[in-house]
Length: 286
Image 1 (cartoon, helix red, strand yellow):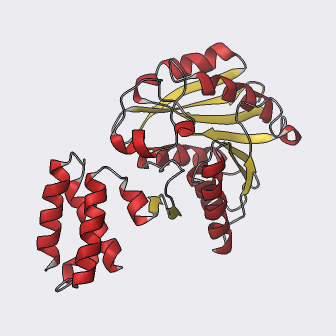
Image 2 (cartoon, rainbow, N blue to C red; image 1 turned 180 degrees about the vertical axis):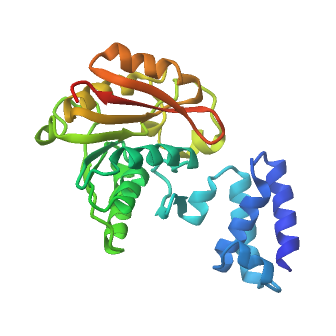
């Protein structure tokens, strides 16, 4: 069969299954099977029978709402491509804006100390190390399954020549976390679990993202409350904080930061779609 027909049929099936971007997903799956780029599909002739069968299997899994990234094993994030799969939260493009803010915050600081709390795939930590080679970055992850992905991606990036990121098993709400860094951190970043208990989420999320990366208590901010205490302890005076949140928390999270005390310059930021996405602040005293 020719690639165009395969993609058209697959896109129709994915659309019927409720997949948000059916044609793009179909093209990416076929490109994955054939070992080419998505644009490379334009110059292909007939697709071998074995590849057609493999493609049909992947399309069937995607129609059953298995995440695209689990099927390809890869997730693009800024300038990196990360390994992902069952057991780790798939990084979202929206989080790239938080990294952009963090890099601007660190501009001009030759060797900043950075802590990423709840690192998952390592997307934030590894992007910061890649784009600011002088940064000393520590990635903290609590989930035993997820941290294997953190370690694997960190090893891959170090082998590629990036500044190595230290990966640490730990709970972002633990009062004893990283005591050696107390008062010496320039920036704390986090994409914590913030989905309110009982909220309706897409099947890709509900069935495949790890629960420890999703659920944040009745209002979605239980973990963030502990995170704020940890960040307040770790940061130097004037150090920066950036926390991602749900669309509906654009007022609640900044209010929580202000109420916890010891913060200034509390501000919320939208993502590229204009939705409230992350809150930033500075530690008092700088």
